[in-house]
Image (spheres, rainbow, N blue to C red):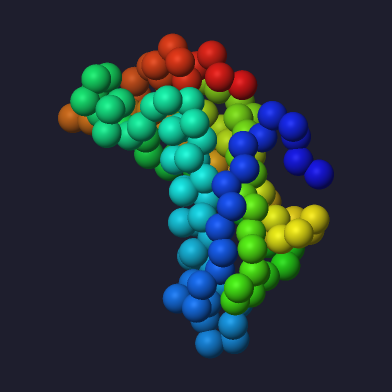
Length: 133
């Protein structure tokens, strides 16, 4: 099962998320993972707009790796788990999984880079994020 320190984000699969066969279209899983990372940030009292305004930073996806186990289907209730696997000076690596009931459907590793909003050059993560585990 997932680590007790992992954040959880729940969602439901809607008709608009599926393809003609009734399973979630593969690109939509990336949206689910992105939403979960945004929720992870907000649970720590931070949000994208405030970080852009106060620290002049944004986050950009630098790398990802996905492993598909089973498809999600129309009306499934999903749980996306997110935890920090590694934190660098200007990047975070997330381990994320999408679950249906007690079965993992997709596992992913996402490297998110912190960059300056104007130059897109790497920028040091704010202290509140660096200290998070």
